[in-house]
Length: 173
Image (cartoon, rainbow, N blue to C red; front, side):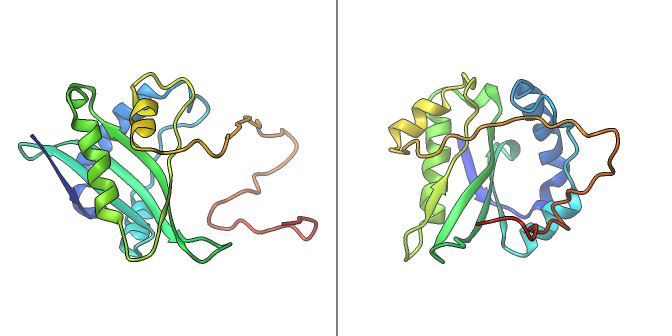
């Protein structure tokens, strides 16, 4: 039986990393332009600040899955919202009701005194059954995310950075 816990990134990074590599390889179609290059420092920093939370799934003490989520207050309503970073369960443990139990644990773990909206992203071509599980748990499709890869221009230096991004004077919200 799988056991689920919230754990600290810095304590389990050495276990998460190989699973994350395995996960990335299984999402090559969706992440075909993204290299596998997670930043331990950023994950640890965001985790220690409470912005990133990590739930793990273990079988007999061995890490076999994880759920990462960003938990913050909405800029629009000031109410809590959770945005899934990644949800992964080793294919060997996807049988039975393991994934469903994992998702139910996540919901119960993060229920608060005030409502919290959970935003899950799923690749369109994901054939793992996650769409059916989310339908079963009454998650409603509300947003279509479109993707386009913009290759770098040869005549310009990189200007985008998550750490240093800013809104242009010409941007409108």
